[in-house]
Image (cartoon, rainbow, N blue to C red; front, top):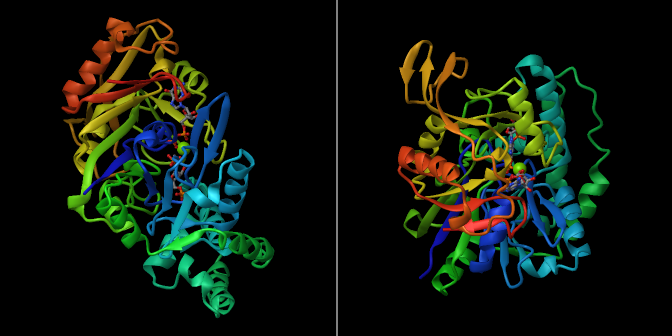
Length: 421
Ligand code: GDP
Ligand code: IMO
Ligand code: MG
């Protein structure tokens, strides 16, 4: 019997999960998304092309893969259709490669309006949501009123949709917010028709069946550990479980079937949206990171906040998910820096600490260790032996500090710019 290996973002999202899942998908017949929705933007570069995936797992460009959208995902049919049509236009038989759990929850147009109304009302205190309806969709799921993919085939689907919309209108009317609750209905139902071209499955049986048949699966996380609804910087989080625990509930696999847990991080840090970011840089160095790393949101285009690597945060995320292998991304972005800093501890309200504090408004000052930059272009390096000694010192320090080996080093956005150790 095979297991489900896991790739998780262990910072604030956008670590490069799409690239790495695409690289690893060569070795996995099944790739599965287990949480989140189109708030995710996972970029893949190959053969001079770039594609950003939002809902479809990042194995879709590999021949012979099953790309499974699990029950833990919230799926927007309109975005899904647009995305799949884009993939089809590249000559990829997307309908053969993608399957969807009947228990996947649906995002309806009013979910997005609810997101917008709630964010607008929060003013300065807003979360910085991607406004894809994620929070409202998970709220309906927990509130037991949601529509799911399997419901699409029911005779009374339209009736149930209308009932849900009435509830949403009641909710929206609390806000001083102008909206048209009906304008996107036609596009939504058209997209639902399109979805019928895909196989809707009893996902938990399907994925356990693959494992029993000797087919290994790779679970592709969305967002990152610090955006987890329980352990992230609440309320500045997303609404799903982004840690390894989410794999079990989001796919229907038992903890004993989870294999390797790979934690993916950038050689520095970024965050989009509001909330604490202890190592954030507000100076020219931060701007340099943004420019060199091309740090603009793959879903919203917003500039990402940038800062140094944070080992307090990384250790926390590794603990939460039992990460046993690390993948370091975007190392090349640091190529030109004279000095590179890493936070090894915090001073929280003036007291030294190695913990992420509960209070998201706590005054956190990072305690930094400095490294000499390697000052060499790494984008063309293909062998570990050709990596500069200063770079290897940096990697070794991270490994020793968190006690987990770095198994993959990424040196550019392309599939080929990857060193597997
Ligand atoms: P994801 O959400 O975790 O899949 O990450 P995103 O796709 O949102 O953001 C990562 C960005 O970095 C994308 O534009 C990738 O193409 C790019 N990228 C991934 N790995 C590397 C790398 O090693 N070096 C550089 N320079 N860019 C990378
Ligand atoms: P990937 O999978 C980075 C952030 C938003 C906001 C907060 C809540 O590409 O790494 P939501 O739309 O969920 O209500 O937003 O979470 N966020 C992400 N940040 N990468 C993502 O996904 C994100 N998905 C949500 O910016 O701060
Ligand atoms: Mg992203």
